[in-house]
Length: 91
Image (cartoon, rainbow, N blue to C red; front, side, top):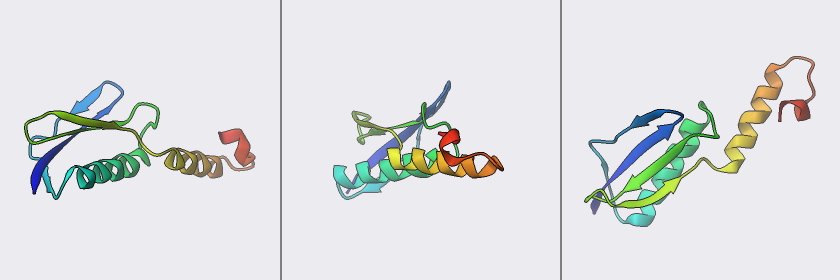
């Protein structure tokens, strides 16, 4: 088990994970980072959100962006909010 850190960036904002979370291995930490990006990405600007995953010694392992499927989901939901507008107009 090892400690991993997950820093968040979007737009001009940067939030440093000072506590970290323990995971079994890098694969588990990277999967968790993708879940963070996808969940937060539902409520933020997809174009600028990213999650940086660091090892316990703060070595950068990966920079993760929200899945493209989440971006499509967000565009579909935004299209529904525009009453009378066709869905393809929201994309």
